[in-house]
Length: 226
Image (cartoon, rainbow, N blue to C red):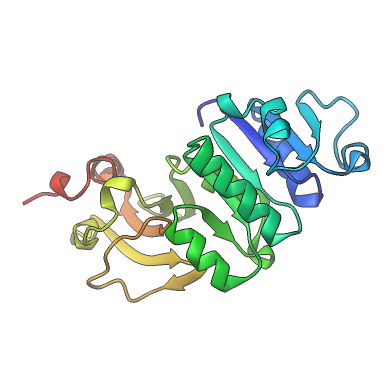
């Protein structure tokens, strides 16, 4: 994963775990929270990142967190409204591509998925899931066959596949689209599926076909074999 500057809004259990993991793996991190005690309670004594007192939807706080240099923003406070506001400002005002919002209402989550803001309900949240969505170019291996010959990978839908039929991602026994996570729900019936921004793809791939699949994902349907 290339080094990023990430802003984490919300210094509760999830936000602090995410910030600490990002810092541990060499990223630049700024944490924003309205409660000063949260920093003392959840961040380590030798915290090397920034701690900004304020609200994630407040531009002064975002500027203190160096939002203009940010590669990703994770809004993970306990309030849907705050997270939505933060995510929209990050995406629409500062044009940050990788924005994740913790949204507990599944109806709202589906709406913001369509706007390109990745969302996951609280019950499904874990630090590694947030990390995946902050850096969607990273293809996460979910499962590997015992002999390493095949793997199940998870990847955020590349922009070149939005609005495109996903059939080319299934090619014989080389690689196959097996499921799509959309709006917080898994979709197993992928025949005839068309990509939507915010989709998470689950693909089976043979080990020696991995580079070919990566190229296909990067270049879109035009990269498919004919």
